[in-house]
Image (tube, rainbow over all chains, first blue to last red; front, top):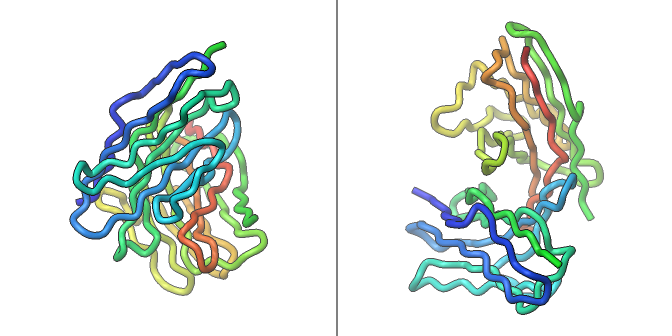
Length: 110
Length: 115
């Protein structure tokens, strides 16, 4: 069964501090991992996906199959990063179906 | 980019009545759409996969007779909550995958309150 775990409900950091949002997954096949973000009063939107290996808004995430993790990182947090972050897992046979983690609220304080 | 809309954005209904929520892909076609439910401060729970021209696929534990899904065209899926009860009050969100991409585009959600 597919499962995504985000252990932190809330992560509070100061502006300029490094950020790491944790995500672990459980999946027997070849996983596709995503990070989605939801800013206040806005809809959910894709932040990044593991297959593209890109950096978006300074965020990166590396898929570690050995640790079954896909942690989201940013070296210097900005106030505008405050949002809800969801890790999501899709599978090759899932037909675009996603399993979401419980989400982590990131609060960047001045 | 691709846009998904939902209507209504919020609805209040009385217990025992039915409510229909629409999900539209505005500038792209979607043979598949997904319906999620989100409780306050909780994650999105996939309810069902809506398939254009065929029956929806429901996740385990979701009552298909209670949550009727119709995907009549390539740009519209509807979710009808039948005989709604207060415990059905929630935030319902739909999404659609973009064409030729793994990215899913989400609607803004519909807040349902059953009194």
